[in-house]
Amino acid sequence: MPANFDERDPDERVVEIEVERLRDFHSHPFKVKEDQQMIQLKESIKRFGILNPLIVRPVPEGVYEIISGHRRKYAAQQLGYRKLPVIIRYMKEEEAVIGLVDSNLHRESITPSEKAAAYRMKYDALKRRAGRRNSGQIDHNSIGKRTVQIIGEDSGDSPKQVQRYLKLTELIPELQEKLDEGTISFNPAFEIAFLTEEEQRALLLVMESSQTSPSISQAQRLKQLSREGTLTKKQMKSILGEVKKGEINRVMFKNEQLHCFFPREYSAEQMKEEIIRILTLWKETRKGKPGKND
Image 1 (cartoon, rainbow, N blue to C red):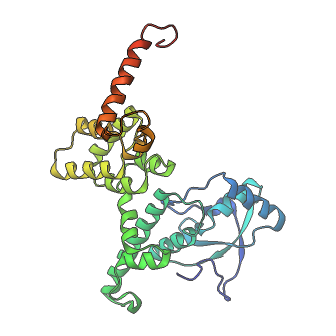
Image 2 (cartoon, rainbow, N blue to C red):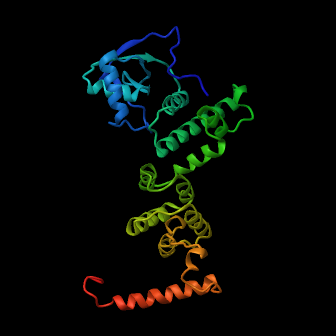
Image 3 (cartoon, rainbow, N blue to C red):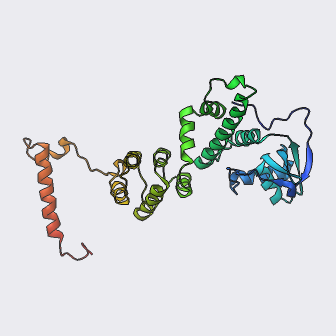
């Protein structure tokens, strides 16, 4: 795991900067929410103040871009703070992106789409940085390591899982939202990400009209049909209209439970047929009785 990005260098100074001079990081993927953690953060700031200074970098027009501390800034603003303690670090774009991602991935309430976007930002930043170093300075720590492996080592995910999160960034926003809500599970969402944007939008309409979402096996079939270039909205409706394995309800009896009603020589199939016949007759006798078919 990487060193704590917020860990203070002994030579760094903490200064106070006006809130209006602090800007959120561009393309910041992490949402600032009014959740229970935010309530707890506000209570902590009320009692003890801001214990950990924000990490910022100077950008043009005399303002500072936040690398770490977006939630602290929001909470402090809500409490009426006019100035915030910060540490100013001079960072290139790639280092700033990597610092932003690494300082936020430890949060408890991070959604799959936030994590996917964060991995994408870090992936692209590492690729750009590696491209410059290949033409000059060499980072010996990264020699022979794939970018997804480096991200995985820093975050605790396997390289394969990092790749799966990267693929999720190809979902349309509406499907990413359904993933975050839990309407779509992670594995089906990964398979759906292989569909074209047009196919994803068609699938979204089918999901909303049928009030269902694809299982992993259904999503894999949709992906295969998409690869073959034969996926249609009609096929989507047909696949999503199937009864999923987990939705099948069964009434089961042991043979021993039924043999007290049937001759011992009856096979399981004979007992099944007789039960269906009896239930059919029972249903016929119920027809026309008041309150039974209203």
